[in-house]
Image (cartoon, rainbow, N blue to C red; front, side, top):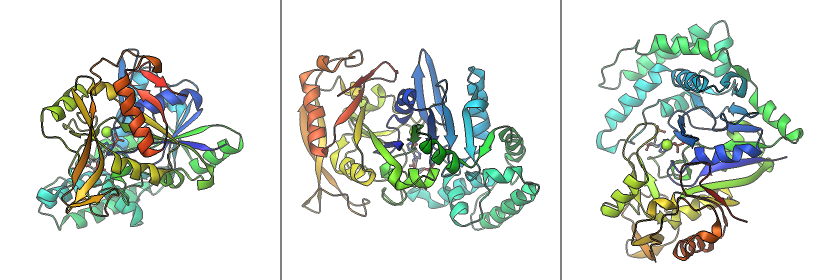
Length: 421
Ligand code: IMO
Ligand code: MG
């Protein structure tokens, strides 16, 4: 058996939560492989809405095992809050969730470093969610980090204090006022709470599942264009968000990658700083933001909006080896007279069909216009009922990318999902 992977193909917020929850019916095991509480995966069903930050989006499905993989960084305080809210909804979260001992912890001082370093960057700030993601991954690769398994050791408190002291030293370079005790007592309480969970060697667990023919679904966070290597550097997150990251973040071999579900919105959004070639600054952009409720699930910030960009979409499909495309939120565009897609770029007067290594330059998208469908798609449940203009939009994307769109999602609810053969 292989691991199927669900990933975002844009700048995050594609709707991974809804799709993982939807697909979870077919998978006994759901595993998050990278990122941390910078993610905000929203789920809606039966009048319930929930935003998950650290816990995999299979948690609402009876009979699933949910794993937080080694590639994830965990803030124990956010984790505790999330799990308590799930338990309050009657979800047996301690039974359904396991955590890799190799996952790294976000310390209170990581949050301070994140804030101090963004502050020091001034106008060139990344627009980080300020959840301590980058400092935690820096400590991981710098070989200073504290791992989940460490919370079970006798000298855990000493390890914590020693890393905290390193952070205080590091913070001296910034002109930034902070309280070194900030958040510490809550963090230590949350560590106690985490000790009640099943802390496991998740790489063995996942590989054992494959041997036993149990299907595993890997859930990505963020998106290909925020990837540490292939995103619009330095305006990226600090982990490998592409398919290869699933192998690293869970410990299964590349030969065991099965289906790769690539999720994209029918338009684009971006939150935080960085290049965005098809960004709209007009009424149409405002319509996408308002109708699409494009406000950050983690930070509440308004998201930047723009047209679908085929140059970056094809790039993301290539990097990930996408086998099945999933298109989200086309219903948001129902009221538009015309919709547009960037088919290539103009860079310094030359046509470009590839993403340049540095996207922090002047890029003009070459746009192709489509007639709007001007119909409410949100109630449609069968492909045959989709309007002709909308299907022309869908087929154009499929032809250009060369991969079929297998699922069309037309609203946040589980029901608003059309599967195509
Ligand atoms: P999900 O999983 C959208 C963005 C931040 C910022 C940059 C770096 O919900 O799709 P970081 O906190 O990682 O230091 O921020 O990445 N970002 C996201 N944008 N969705 C996310 O996750 C994001 N996680 C990080 O806004 O620009
Ligand atoms: Mg998000």
